[in-house]
Structure formats: structure tokens, C-alpha cells
Image 1 (cartoon, rainbow, N blue to C red):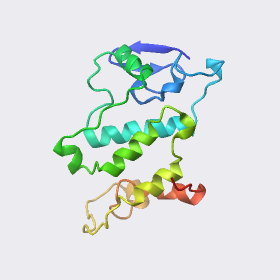
Image 2 (tube, one colour):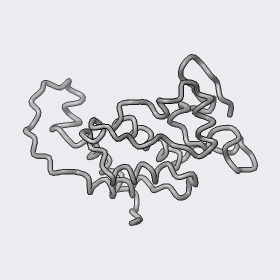
Image 3 (cartoon, rainbow, N blue to C red):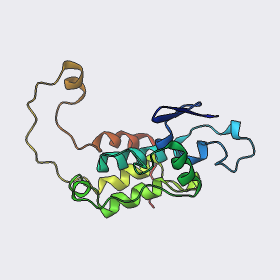
Length: 170
């Protein structure tokens, strides 16, 4: 796998975008004997999921303070992750201490220590408030209307993971 720098976004030759890619997929970041044998797996997806969560709560790309991708690579090689936002907007978007702990667990340096998708769903259930909003009557395009008959909490779609995966309580 090699890293290709193109403009402001870096795509990895094997797939993925640098700021959301698990560190073990970056060249020279894994302790594996053969870097070519490292393939994206669930643990890599979990790391990326946490980066997407970070982006949702902050409205910013991960490592927004790093102008150049080589600075991102340097930060990752030093074990650094994005810092917790402390602004009111992130809190208003629902970033609680509990969710931040989940995000940090997903960023664990050891991929084997990251929670499974089922565990994340289980942990996020505690964050789901009772949704007593009125039904959204907005005229949604037909395919979406078939899939989503009513407004739902953003994490509710993850519930299907629990139907296929055992949960290990952390």
C-alpha cells in the first residue's frame, strides 16, 4: 500500500481516505511482518466510524488543525487522535461524556481492543432518548419513503447489527 497525495485530500492506494483510515493500514505504522498482508477489517471500520462520529459532532474533518497530510501521518505515528471538542455546538449535537468514551475506545491503538459493532450499538442505546417528535410529513422521494416510514434517531439504523452479531458487555 502506498500513500498518494492529491490536492487537499490524501487517498490511500488500497482504498480509504487518510484522515479516516485506521493507523495500522498506513505504511510503516503496523508491527506486522508483511505490510502487504494488512487488509481493512472490522477493527479498521470501527476506527473510521469513530472518525465519522467525530466529524458529525464537531462539523469538522478529523485533525482539522493539521494543514498538510504529512502532519496527520506524524500525529498518528505518535499515537495522537483528535481532541475532544468543548464548544457548545458539539454538546448541542449530543456529544456526551459517554459517547466520547465510546469514540476513544474505537480509536484504541490496538485494533483487537476496539469494540465490535454490536458492542457499539449496545453502548449507544443508552444515549437514545425517547423520540416524541411529531411524525415528519415532509414529502420524501419514493425510495426513501419506502425505507424510512418515519423520522428516526440517527443511530437507530445500527440496531440491525445486534440481530446478527453477539454482544460482549464491556
